[in-house]
Image 1 (cartoon, rainbow, N blue to C red):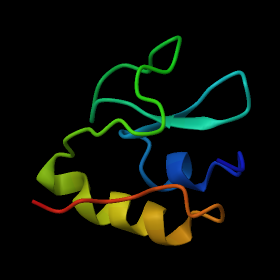
Image 2: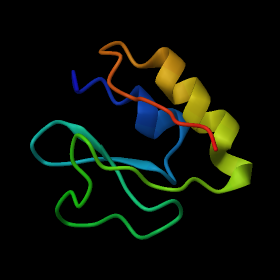
Image 3: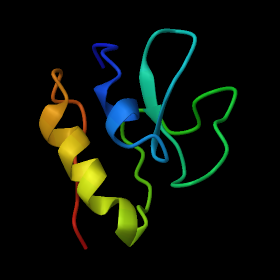
Length: 71
């Protein structure tokens, strides 16, 4: 993560910024956690209504840090 925050701007129900300056994935639609619960190789399910935003976030991520696996 390069800390640009585009993912949170595009899909705030799935991504959040942490005090360490990095952005992390959260369970889709959940409250923003105090500490990241999903790091690096973790996967989460995304609600159908948020899939397009997550795809856009992955495409716009300057660090190319968001990887998608479509079911």
